[in-house]
Length: 67
Image 1 (cartoon, rainbow, N blue to C red):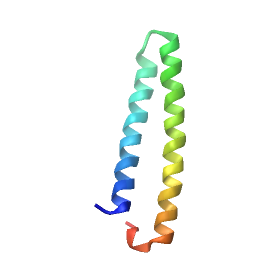
Image 2: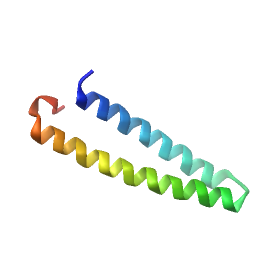
Image 3: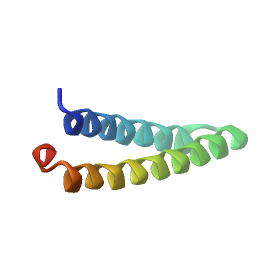
């Protein structure tokens, strides 16, 4: 598996985690838990954005990894 494929797989996993956290935040009846899920979802979103930037850097520096 190439570096680009690994990064894409990681991004897909993060998107799934982000969606699950969002769902948990909306569906829980405990306000503290809802807040924790929401805050964690925001952190995952930041990580996802950083990883997307890194993916772009990889594609610029290593053209063979471009999709």
